[in-house]
Each structure stands twice: as structure tokens, then as C-alpha cells.
Image (cartoon, rainbow, N blue to C red; front, side, top):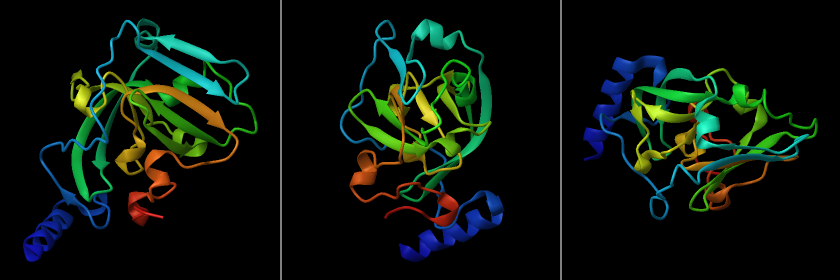
Length: 200
């Protein structure tokens, strides 16, 4: 069994080269890993709140949010549990687009992503201020399925995918990075797959 896994990883490394972080193996499906049940969010009541250390709090309903300019991002997904799904296409609103509607205060250095179902995760602000970070509501041309975070999830391609929080409902700007849900249970505070920042 172990030799089969190691052989698969060697084959993946030869095929994908520098695109595959250390310790990862490529899968063709998209595993569903969730703590607790899958929230079913009514789009009529869905809200995205941007709050905390901002000059003025902002809230979007679904119609307002999906009326914002969109971007399409092609990226690989790397899970902390060691699988990678290559060549995904996400569509949604760029984080940088949201920054045109809310102004973080100078002392804001990190963000806590709040989700339907009670999940949270932390991301430093500099990791969010990248051209390919988005709040996605489509995947591979289709509406994002609830089990994969629909109606809207954060996508931060350069970090392990638990940082790409499912069922997003709010972004809280905070003065100092602090652990979210999994980080409190021993996951790494940042989660860079190229450095294998899996656990603290």
C-alpha cells in the first residue's frame, strides 16, 4: 500500500513538475471534507458583510454581490490532507474588487473569514491582496455546489485549501492574525503548501 502511494507520487511529480507541492498526490475527483453538515443557504437571505477595522462597514445581498465585476481564475487546489486537484476554473468577485467598496484601516493586518455553519479561518491581508484571490460562486462553468462551498466560497490558490473557506458570509478585518477553527486545533496559522505548513 505504502509503495503504491509513493509510486503514484513519483509519477505525479514527473507529470506535474513544479506545480505539485511536496507531499501531495493528484486526484481526479474532488473529495468533500467538511466539519459538520453542509449548510443550505437561501440566496434571498444570503449576505456578505465586510466589517471590523474598516472606515465603514459594507454588506452585500446576493444580487448586489453577483452584479459586481467578475474574474475567472485557473488554479490548482492543494488540500492539507495531501491530495491535489489540478486545473480548476473558478469564477467570482476578486478580493481586490471588494477593496474598492470598503477601506480597511491602517492597523488591519489580517482577516477572519466567517461562514454559514459557524466555521472560521484566518488569512493575513497580504495573502488576500493578490490578483487571483476571489470569492467564487462558479466552478468549471457551473454554479458552485453546496458540498464544495456554494453559494460562495473564498479561493486563495497559493495556500492549502482549508483557507479557502466554504459558505462565506463575512470578512472581519482584524489588527493581529489570530487562529480560526482548524488553527485552534493544531493546523498551521498560515498554510503554505510549498513549505508544507500543515500543522503548528
